[in-house]
Length: 322
Image 1 (tube, helix red, strand yellow):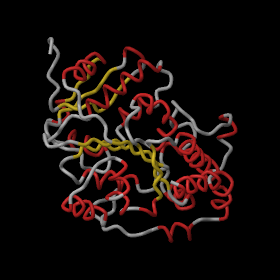
Image 2 (cartoon, helix red, strand yellow):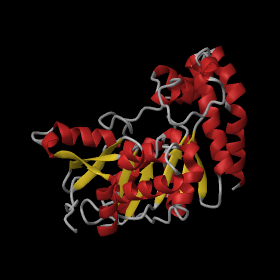
Image 3 (cartoon, helix red, strand yellow):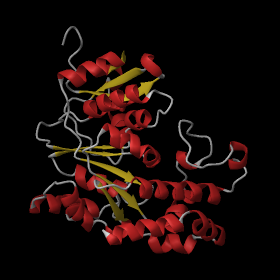
């Protein structure tokens, strides 16, 4: 590799800095597959093992580019975008249950580059392609399909991601917004805290005004904007999926959309995953839609009605029409 290290078994786990001086952090994983609900969970487990941290180092972008040239990974079979707390982890876990798939779920290196709007687009597009390729390497040697689940905020970058990967089919998952908002009020994600994520903001208001908003209003405006962006970006390769269609849609509608046929054995393995809690696989899945709707306060309902429902209804209209 012209003096550069062979990267087989190595995985980029983070990026630091901006511009051409950006550094890539690598960790040794060997042939281990990504089967945890989230990318970071697998990486943390690797880092926590004896000597795991010793096999971590940083390189320049040139190493990532060289590996892209030397060993292009699987080309993505499908992208998963979502409203947040709406079944996207269930979908990614069902797909990850199959030996023939590589599934990368909310990998910070991918999400960071997708949302790095301060980097000129031509550079960012190349870097994103290199990163996607590096994470799409075959782990066991049997993989033929590659799926990426983005962080919820990446729906704001849908046009850019589509330009970078124009032939990749994608889905947008969404759910009854009252249930989603209650889930975030119980346990808030970073994207729903004003000012925590600085690269992009989806709430069109001055920061001083944002900081005066109630938690319900700010989160509802974020959710509404995510849904609105999905409506605006819907094209011939996009498909809308409501939480109520899961898990059956994975083996049927998503299989057709992603052009990924599943055998009876594949379906049985995915069904076995679907009966477990997607984020906590040791637990059996327990439906919670009714309890979340019961926990919705008047302020939650008012925020949802104002900021989310119009876009949610448009998603439903487009989905049922198609």
